[in-house]
Amino acid sequence: MNACVLMVQGCTSDAGKSTLVAALCRWLHRRGVRVAPFKPQNMALNAAVTADGGEIGRAQAVQAQACGLAPRTDFNPVLLKPSSDKGAQVILHGRAIGQMDAVGYHDYKRVAKAAVLASHQRLVEAFDAVVVEGAGSPAEINLRANDIANMGYAEAVDCPVVLIADIDRGGVFAHLVGTLALLSESERARVQGFVINRFRGDIALLQPGLDWLERETGKPVLGVLPWLHGLHLEAEDALPREHADKPGAGLRVVVPALPRISNHTDFDALRAHPQVDLRFLGPGEAFPPCDLVVLPGSKATRADLGWLRAQGWDAAIARHLRYGGKLIGICGGLQMLGRAVHDPHGIEGEAGSSEALGWLDLETTLQPDKQLREASGHLSIEGVEVHGYEIHCGSSEGPALARPLAILSDGRGDGALSDDGRILGTYLHGLFDTPGALAALLRWAGLQDARPLDMAALREAALDRLADAVEAHLDTARLSALLVGAPCEA
Image 1 (cartoon, helix red, strand yellow):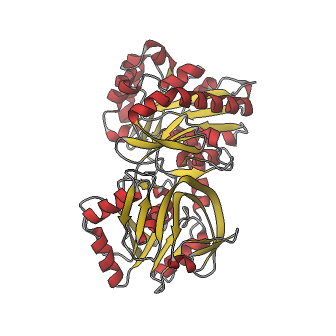
Image 2 (image 1 turned 180 degrees about the vertical axis):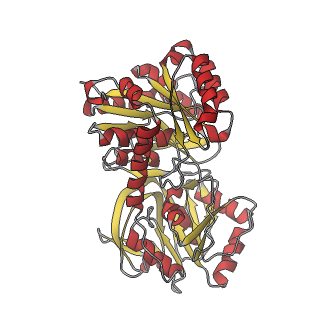
Image 3 (image 1 turned 90 degrees about the vertical axis):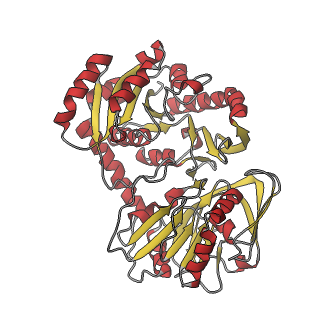
């Protein structure tokens, strides 16, 4: 018997679709349902390496964890990784197939839709339930033709839809009613109810609005999810909205928020650590005093390197180093630390070369074939164990690599540690997620009493909190009824 399928669509980007899908997945998993996540098409620069050697959106990897599963490419068959305002790398079933602009991708959607439906079929044959995440909003009428991300997919597979809206943005009732108004008649009929997200306050004050919404639309409100503070879950793409001041923190960390920053989830462990005050530095902001600067990954290393210089931050980082500060570069950040970045094939933009920052004696050449693999080994700092993953199309060479940051289990060296010990670079994403490695790197950066922090345990606790919220605040009887099929019934 094929799985029952339920799709979550949002009135806006960042309405809470990824979180609600993860919550429903963990709720069903705890009830013994064999459930899988699915996102037909994702546009994101946060990616994860899958068990079958591909890459998918990071949010789908978290949703897989909620289901008790290892990530696989069928969970996100189409991934778009923007490299400019008009172009993106297209990844199909975990493999990059090239760069496309918006017009080119629109023409390619016939192929992408076939990939989506093939993955859908494999999942519904293998699981009891599939919880699907839409992308952006189904009311983006300019994108309706050949849609595979929202209602186009839902209509193709004939599944019910739950619509979620973020009350913290304001105008939540306008979002919900306006979204319905822009749908076709058959699409409106497919929407089976609403979820309101990120509510703070007395629910009694919201109740008249909920009653009006149900009368006006004839559709039920399935529940109101509260704002869950301190929820340690990886974001799909958007940088964290808030910076939590930590007056007693012993280590100040600054991460430049590059225009094409990728895998900023690398910094979740630092953000969560009680002894670390981490700030993402935005355009036009003055570089604050800090102990550690981390250059993040980038989907357009040469362009982001030019942008960093235009902000004057190269000079600020040089000053930081002169005063004894520490510096880390991750993936694209490692490439920026070298002497030059070459892109002879135009992988990330116009073909050519760029002078890099020159703090490590290495050069990087971007190659058409992307490196995708999970990696484990030991850091040269304190010899502690480290686990992570590689997603890069750059190959780096130079004397600096003779002193690697880590020796991996397959015998390869990773990254570099400068002769003076104050600069390090790595291709490992997830560098801070291993508790012992995190503590060792914090001590290297100057936090002598650094304590370990277990991000995997925090994510598990967050997923359980989400499932608890489903049980406490959503109409689980109606949700079970939408998930038609014996394994999904209450």
